[in-house]
Image 1 (cartoon, rainbow, N blue to C red):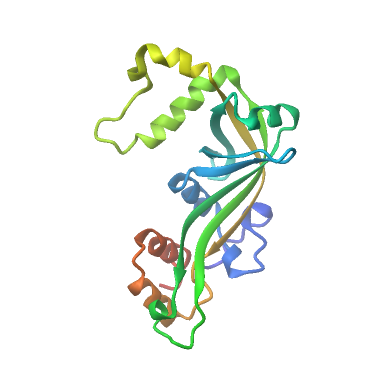
Image 2: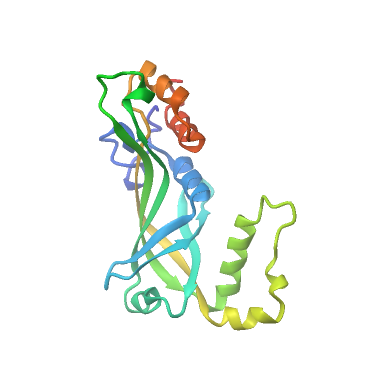
Length: 211
């Protein structure tokens, strides 16, 4: 993949081909794999939570919207200290020499990850809005999308048990280890023999300048 010319932490350090990515790659990973580890910087609390990205006019990630239960240890942790690390993991798989078509080739593991440093702002007054953006995202491809109103009289009681939040992004780092260091014949062999289509699609994406 050719360097886009971006600088700064959001574009990766560029010291490795696996760190050459752009804002669109980050956005795509978050949209396709929205379940992330949300980790408090103080106290050790952590939970897997689905998150929805908010992007600026240039496509850069600026915020993440989510919610958790008021009984979740993250609630107290972020009330005391808003700093968080958020970890997204994309497609991943073991790659064998058989798939590479070379017995003298060392096996490896391909994966994609994005780490985000953020400050969490608890927003109890926007909990319903946080729920709605998540439902809109996950139900978008359903033939008959579900809506919150279908919960009926159960909804107010459920709503009282959760709290919405906004994670304001302060730093982004990513590593997309997806075959960028392989010679073209080995890369094509892996793609031809890889059963995981999602991973193959991401490998094509991150090697699009040479395929």
